[in-house]
Amino acid sequence: MRIVCAEQALVEAELIDGRLGCPSCREVLGPWGHARERVLRCRSGDRRLRPRRARCRGRLGTHVSLPEIALSRRQDEAVVIGAAIEASVGGEGCRRIAARLGVPEDTVRGWLRRFGGRAELIRAFFTRCAVWLDPKLGAVVPVGSVVADALEAVAVAGRAWVLRFGSGDPWRVASRLSGGMLLCNTSSLATGAW
Ligand SMILES: [Zn+2]
Image 1 (cartoon, protein in one colour):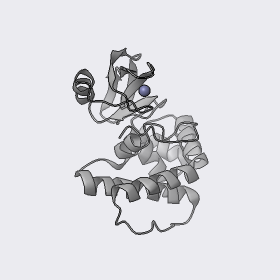
Image 2: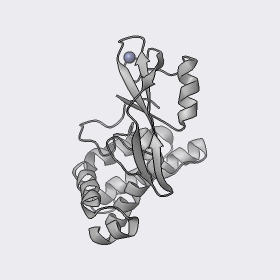
Image 3: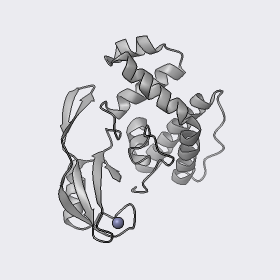
Image 4: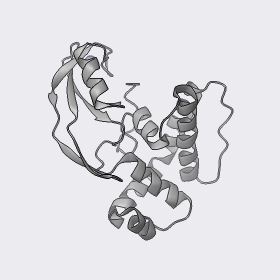
């Protein structure tokens, strides 16, 4: 299971102090080596990530902490993937998006297909997150298609997060809220680690 955290250094300190809870059973997590290094393609250039592995003292399972700039199983930064989804909902074609973001067209197509296939799950999940973050929030108004509604729910949850915590890019917030699982092929989204 994955835990998404803002800063690698912060999770390190919390792990060592025993302040990080297991997303499955709420027992304390302790440090347990690192996951395999990976390269994340970011707007600012490639970044090497060496995600921390943590071990649950309860069930003895391990969890990987993924920084919120990344999404599970995706090689590109969350904000780049988000920009492609926004552009597509805004009517821009796949080829143009790919060229503008400097990403292979098939990769962009893959993101859009997965987001579209999970749109109803994403809409429902982020609407719940938004209400949890801001209980005074009114109804999220449907904007047209199921994909546009899903994008709107992500944006509303992002704004609710900013209202509550002060700052945050909406796609980083989306990564964090979904436990990095925004574009995974699973039936649930969050690990509950936030
Ligand atoms: Zn556990």
